[in-house]
Length: 295
Ligand SMILES: NC(=O)c1ccc[n+]([C@@H]2O[C@H](COP(=O)([O-])OP(=O)(O)OC[C@H]3O[C@@H](n4cnc5c(N)ncnc54)[C@H](O)[C@@H]3O)[C@@H](O)[C@H]2O)c1
Image (tube, rainbow, N blue to C red; front, top):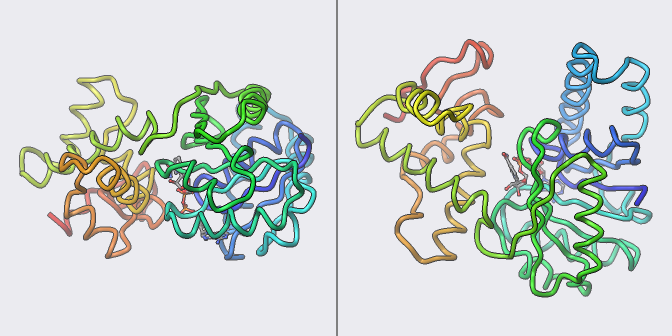
């Protein structure tokens, strides 16, 4: 594989683009919004600067990496020669299905179509194409350039050839792929999201405050970050969508999203990406304060 297209230039899409370009792949990054594409370019550049400071790459390598990335507002202008397309758009089933349907028409027959979905069925996504055998889940973790894990999700229709190629490609990227079967939330989010939801219940039941809940999980469980701040990093809209997929998929009350989470998403307070979630980041991530508006 030489050329990759990433659809969606938000939190995950720009990180995935960074990783592939750093390993020498030509990458086309597509988003509907040129503002998001400009922000993605700036973000990748800042992250590469951080790597230069840590002496992981040189300034010359940064120039080479950036030269491998091109930015597009339409996928029809760039997917034709891609060997792999990774979709990383909003966690909404209908949006993803429409993109896969279009990709199936636009891409060459051999192209593998992967989704970075956190929870949606790969079998269902694959059904919107005529190449179910070449549709697979590639669930990267946030922040992508740092996190080693890739959950590789094989549906009943994904061929052995496709998943073997993706397992080996993930290793070439310097990641550690783990093969999982297709079920709501896969492994990572089936375990993580109920914990985040429970942290929000603990907050709304007035057992303790935002900072205190996070501190208990950091110091008591050796988690690198508390669950409420982690939710802010993931994006509260993404958390809500994943919980809804778990709730609908398992028909079990334990996955029902906390109403405060729903209210915050409706208000557009989505976490770090909007500078406000359980914490207020308007002065910077390190200078965060508590957002008490919904409590
Ligand atoms: N945020 C996380 O921590 C995380 C971790 C793992 C996986 N994921 C998954 O990755 C995917 C993306 O999540 P994110 O956090 O990057 O979301 P995000 O909201 O930061 O970015 C999504 C981007 O998709 C773009 N988009 C929407 N529709 C589009 C279309 N039709 N064509 C092109 N671009 C389109 C939007 O403009 C936006 O920039 C979701 O499926 C999510 O579940 C997220």
